[in-house]
Image 1 (cartoon, helix red, strand yellow):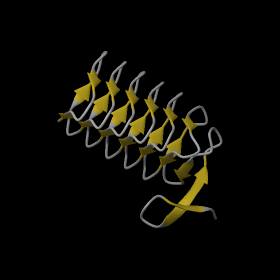
Image 2 (spheres, one colour):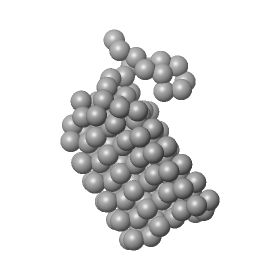
Image 3 (cartoon, one colour):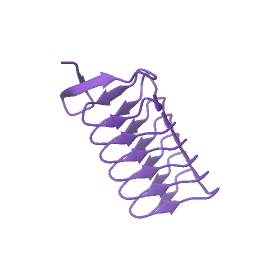
Length: 132
């Protein structure tokens, strides 16, 4: 059995066939999704559609990234957050709790989107912004 340490000790995991990033066996990643070589998907997270997780990005908890969404650089999507449509989360940005980022929205820089916040349309949350 192959294992990988996502930060809390080794767990059963595998490298994704499309990109080579690490995926915990408890997470679900579609064959059509891309998980880059330094990206990580763990917990009970789900990545589907043509979603792309790359750079040193992490998707964890019960978060979902799907459709054509992009999560990259050092971004984190976790808890029960959802990123979908053609949304992008990048830089050092974090999306968590029950937050949603959808459509063509961008969350970047050191921005945090959390609680029940919803960023959609062509909105951009950047810099050190906090949206809850």
